[in-house]
Length: 245
Image (cartoon, rainbow, N blue to C red; front, side):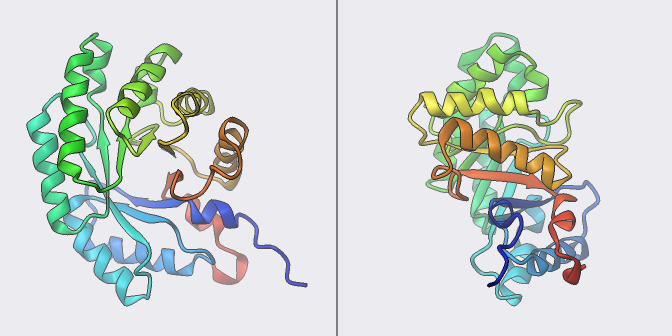
């Protein structure tokens, strides 16, 4: 009998990520090659907007048409600028992005300006025009349980398809405690919104810890790629079986 593949569920939920400031088309092609080496294809590749076409073309050439290409907007600073959010999302859609990872204006939330946060979220939702919208709340900068919960609920109520922990560019990245707060907000609002853990997740054990929290809060049946993602770059190499290295 064939042995079950370790980390199969984790690989299927992976958003394989490359968001370096000096990324080149060759770097993105290497990322696509890594996606092709995984025994289970990732859910998506997440790249800068100018690399969308490179990623889509290379994935298609490798027979990975089902792997989505996601991109980032209002990134990484999370500006309080609805017009910028709208403009960047429209350009990303035009370039062929299939998913949008957009940074919430977390500084406005810390300043107590929830109205500004809502204005940006509405601009993001309107411009996405049906594309899955992952709202990055930058949980490490928000800090407290109360702020993380507030940001999560604002994003969910304004139509986010996922709430995401971190850009990976902040001082504090994803943490299990922040993830639990976010997942509890999702459960409280009916489980419609998805969850993405990202930022500093480098090993299968670290990634599986987030899967375990999601299983506990929302149930294993909920934890599928349409609802759960793990954003990482170096993690994928650790998931390769020895024969693929």
